[in-house]
Amino acid sequence: MSTTPLRRARRLTPRFLARHLLRLAISLAVLVVASFAMIHLIPGDPLRQMLGPTAPRQLVDARRAELGLNDALPTQFLHYVQHVCSGDLGTSFFSSQPVSGIIAAGLPNTLALALLATLVALVVAVPLGMWAGVRTHKGRRRGTETAFTTLTGAAVAIPEYLYGLALLLVFALGLGLLPPAGLTGPTSYLMPVTALSIAPAAMIARLARVETQRELDTDYMRLAHAKRLPAVRLYAVHLLPNTLTATLTMGGLLLGGLITGSVLVENVFAWPGLGQRTVEAITQKDYPVAQAMILVYGALVLIINFLVDIVLGLLDPKSALSATNRQEG
Image 1 (tube, rainbow, N blue to C red):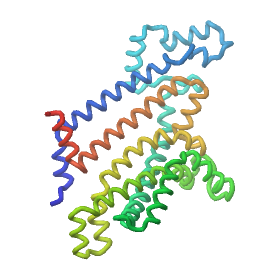
Image 2: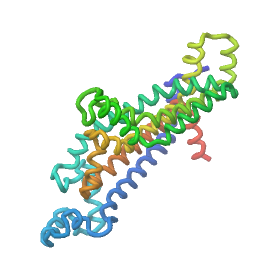
Image 3: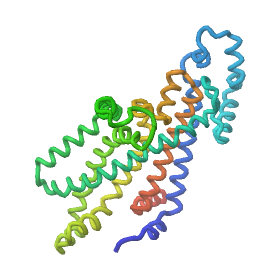
Image 4: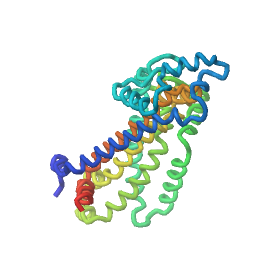
């Protein structure tokens, strides 16, 4: 008998939720410490590197006092945590803009790119993987299996920015069909979303194929086959929902990777997101911006992984129960 989402949710124990919330809190605390330590682990004097070797000593000392870098390290860390908790991430060395404003301007565009790429990857990969799994089940059609594994393996191996460069050369500079850079309208999404989604789609398709073949060997699928159900009902109603748990989990994890992995693709297409500002901050030695970018990217990945764990617990309650049993044992 199937289990409804509500009844599944009831099986997410408080221990399971508390355990994952504690893990998220510890990970975020480590991230804050790492982002704070970044500016202190840079070889040499970061202020001197930023202001240049010819900057007067008085200017460097005044800037150091302004940023509170003359305080004791615990005091600096306490002030940093207070500012982060209040949303004050400092001021850009170069533009003198609040870093929180820079992030607020670019984050929606980065998230839109990553979310669309994840959605496209899932929509393309799940049917493709299921089709390949059905076609090659029990060793049938070796040619199809070889072609599928070879093409998806090659697609995973190629970096996203190379896909971006190829798309840019062909469709923007070569054929002139799409805008080459920036965000000027809906068509601006086509090339960066495609560049970001190809490799994840290949990975998800390979996983969907394995999950499909595993489900095809279960008793309920054998019974469905014996009843000679129509193909749409057989695969869309019975097979698809039971192959989605691992696939959606992978999709959620890839979303976190796409947010951080979009940095180079955003620079290829001059996308007005966080990626371009991150590269600019690193090359310009704009440490407050770079520090904040590390914090934001890391926090997004941790939160997405936390949500994936919760969704996995809803879709597969055994994961929540096994986690609780391990603690009680």
